[in-house]
Image (cartoon, rainbow, N blue to C red; front, side):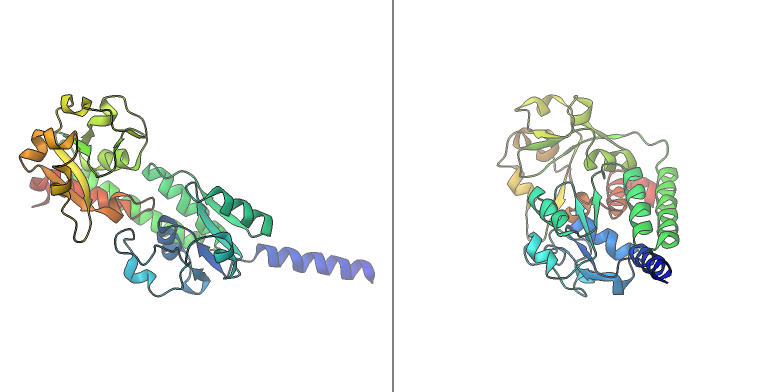
Length: 277
């Protein structure tokens, strides 16, 4: 009898541990996108502290439906009693450490530079959420959009571009900006010059890169062109002087989720309008 009871307890424990999470907390804007796309609404306990901020979040209207973290500290996360927390490689180390010590299950997103990374992340999270079929369906739709865009701009001459912003960094290869360029018919001049990742602006060297178009974030109420006219090396560039600045919604340009596909399409339309008539 005792043996049977022990077996039953083990069986119930296994079933409970295998059950999909019912209180999911997302720690970052990019994981908010993933969680809202993949999880059932009743699985979502809370989204990130910036999820409702128009400047950073492409889903700010949808995020308003859910509770949000106040600051994103471990204690802030734990007050929602999560059984799964979705973190990123840029989540503070101390938050991840404290959550691990608390015993909360963590889904960790550490690669998002390429479209394939985004698809892999979605499929993996969908499985953890018990929404594997839904994740597969979404990924198939994303692949179809990307393939349609590829066919539309096939054969175009890549436009020479450079990421432009108020922070003194350049975006080279192995960045989300490079991924956008790869899908939008653009050549990233910083990557061509050998820069890898996000690195400090290399002085006046960009003036030798023959940049045709600057690509920067659009944010409500911000005149990016005016700000760039005050910054080196942009203020010396013919592209800026001649008004060749393309702005893409900043939340999409910086996206670490599938919402980056919107940035692919937006930049492709701006650089190759003749293909979208």
